[in-house]
Amino acid sequence: MTNAKPYTGRLQQIEAAWTDYNGHLNMANYLVMFDRAADELFTTFGCGADYIKRTNCSTFVLETHTSYANELKAGEQVRIESHIIGFDQKRVHFVQQMFRAESLYLACVLEVMMAHVDLTTRRISAFPPEILSGIEQMAKEHAGLPLPPQVGHVIGLPAIKR
Image (cartoon, rainbow, N blue to C red; front, side):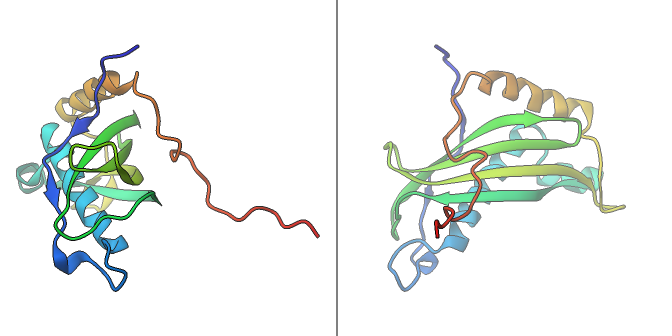
């Protein structure tokens, strides 16, 4: 048994303008909220807005996979838990789970592969040692966490028998 806990950012509230004609949070705005939570996470490593200005380096998302579980509506608050799954000198693989406020009501899961990028060359580059050290420390803390079943999921229809 582990005492490990995912990184949890601040609570976010769903804005009315983010809902669609179905009366629930539009799929694009789930990503807005996940992105804000990822910014908070990477700021804890020293990789925030000031880092970008100072070094002309940033992070870019390479790939995502989104699994929607339950609806959310305007005015509801959500919390996003982030869990580092793996990393190397240039990339971080993590998963984020969006829950309704302080409940266990799972709304959405986002799996992400992110890379460190030199904005001068627009190429992937190594994280500086001090940032990589923070990522490594959190990854060690998260090593005992169970993976959500959505991680590594492949999209597709079952084969049709004819």
